[in-house]
Structure formats: structure tokens, C-alpha cells
Image (tube, rainbow, N blue to C red; front, side):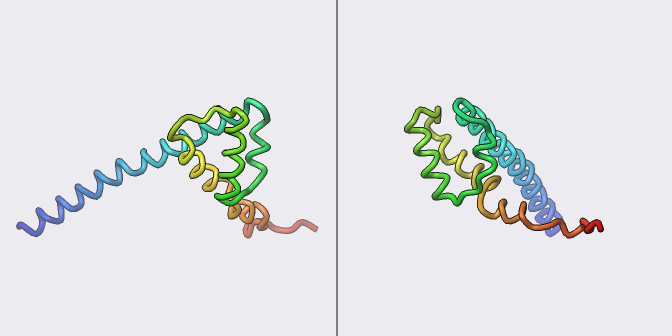
Length: 108
């Protein structure tokens, strides 16, 4: 009987953690998207950002330059934005876009 209690407590703890982890990640992605839209669309369209696939250091250089030029970036938003940009517009995303879809067929 005590073994079942331990398993139940372990499962309960894991479910509680999983319940908190997913919304936190989702909120972080939403916050990154919000920061990007707020700060980058004052001077240019989002296509300028979304069409370029840069490494983390390249994004850091660009965002630092844009902030120096007046892009609104509050304390603590830099890392959120970096994570968002690298995750969604990093070099690996460009590779995924350039690879042909394995499920598509070539028309003659």
C-alpha cells in the first residue's frame, strides 16, 4: 500500500509540474511575439525580421543596434526577445524552409 501512495504522489507532482511548464513556455512565446511586434514595427514591417534567419549572436548585434537607435526595449525583455527570435527565426528555421516537403509530389 505505501508503494501505491509514493507512485500516486510522484505522478501528482509530475502532473502539477507539467501543468505549470506548458503555460509558462506558451506565455514566454507570446511575450516574445508581443515584444517583437511592439519594438520592430515602429520603423519597418515584420517581414524585415521574419525573412532573415540569423544566429543568436547576429540577433544580439542587430537588436542591440536597433535599441541604440530607439527601438523600445524594456529591462528584462532582451533575453525573452532573443529566445523568441532564435527559436522562430534562427538559421535552422531557414534550413527547414528550404527543404522540400517529403509528402509533396512533383507535378509533370
